[in-house]
Image (cartoon, rainbow, N blue to C red; front, side, top):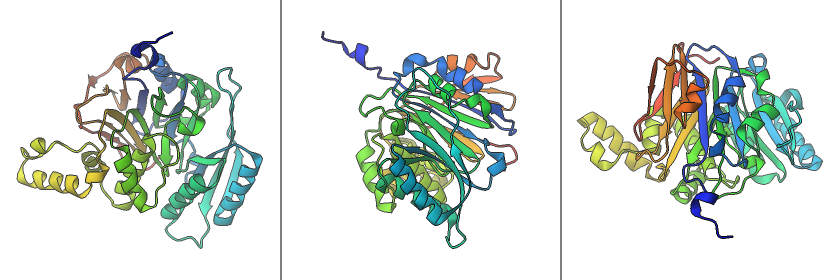
Length: 360
């Protein structure tokens, strides 16, 4: 039977949601699951996931590797590589519960590690190690690698994924989540959002028209895009600009969602000079196409639309808590009474950080 466009594809599909406590208070994963559940129809069961920050305080000084394994052989080989370069202080299966709609599970393990003393520049070494494993070791995928944070994702509806990983047992000061509706790429465990490298995580609603240009540029600096979805490249762009080059998150937003030249020309001289430099210096890292993203990092959260605002995003505040979601209903269902609610303009970054500026 011939199907109409609206029956097979939701042009604005995918759902994102986030909760951030500026005072560092932590809450379990119950409300973030309830939030994303409200947007069930924006997903199609081909990917869901969560990122939580502050969930491993007892191992706060160690990198937490969350790893998918397709085979025992891949697990054995990956563990040999980890042991060769890191001290492992703890390892275990990631706890899950059986769920009728989560199937074809890989083996899911976590490792709390620190690079051996002989390894210089620990963060750079760890990032390169994760990229190398994901690029060269078939059947193993390190999908989370930051400190005191973790990604939990699977092939399924996001609310099912949250229940599968028992997120009610984790407490975080920052939660982000994603419900996937892939239109151009396959649905599989590794392709679910969030995408992560070290403590940077990205969830994304939209499509990246500039993906090939972005990918070709970023791969010149040691990154490798292997996970069959365009969002992966945004994570590497942010890691490159922030961790390697030292740009601030406002500056990163001005690269990814660069203002139009006509907008730049209207700025005061110093601001016009700054924006002109960023747009010229990093032209290949401007992301085009419709998108809304949430970027998690240690101590903060950034929300950003494309400069034409072709994807929806709403922000709400209540006391010391900030809520961000694709739809207002996903905020109201967990925070009915708000002090403030608004929709950011296209290209306008919303950046929130812990009040004390510290790491929880």
